[in-house]
Length: 154
Image (tube, rainbow, N blue to C red; front, side, top):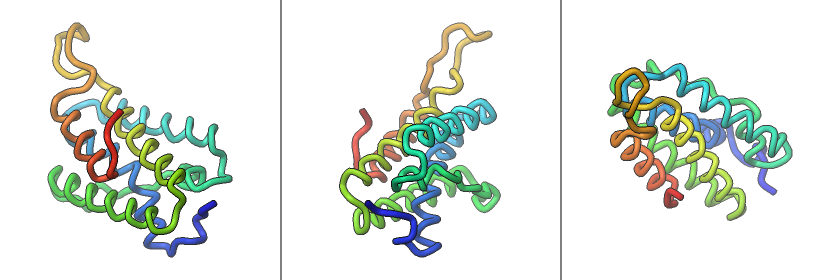
C-alpha cells in the first residue's frame, strides 16, 4: 500500500491537486454556476472520505482537499494547459510509486470530481427548462482530462 510518506512535498502536491484541478478545468470550460459546481466537487471529496477514510492512498488524497490559488492562472487557457500538465505529472508519479489498483482509483476519483462539476449546472435552456446537463465545452474538457489521466471516460 502506497502512502503520502513515499512522496516529497512537491510530488504530493502534484498528486493531491490533480482532482481539484480537473474540476476547475471543467468549471472554466463553461461560464456560470461556479458556486454550484464547487459544492458538487466538495461532495465528491466527502463521499470519497466516507469510502476510504485515511487508510489508503486515495484516502490521504481526499483527507485535505488542496487550496488552489486560481489567480496564478492568468487565463482559462493557462488553467487548462497547466492543469492538464499537472494531472499528467501526478499520474506519472503514481505510475512509478503506487499500485495499479491505487492508480486506477485515483483516475476514477479525478474523473468523478470533474464529472460532478460538469453535471452541477445545466447549460442553455430557458428558466430551467431544456438545456443540457453537460455542455459541449464541458464534454471536451472531460475528454482532455481523461486523456491526461491515461484512461477513457466511462
